[in-house]
Length: 146
Image (tube, rainbow, N blue to C red; front, top):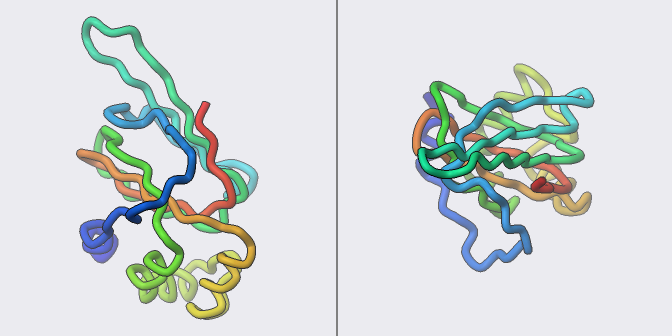
């Protein structure tokens, strides 16, 4: 599966300090929801281990332009990292063109204009990784953790 090979090639964006301290490491994905016609994506996470009090965390992406999740089994989230738009386009470019052809992508005309539009419109890209069963990308203007 192509998306799996894309997930394996991603490298964290070194030196990016987005000021976020998201509670997600070793949290289980309870569910995710897509709202507002795909413009809001929420990851509902729970940390539940014997001898510890349960802790819940919601990661909400606002003004979403694109997301793609591969969810094959129960998911243990390890990281949510911001990556550069340049890296996103370089790694996913061919697949983005195919997704646009098959399904249509918001703001997409071609790869060059897509990257420029995302940058000029203040979008950011986040990669969601897990130890098992889940991988994803979200392009949005904002992310909040509650």
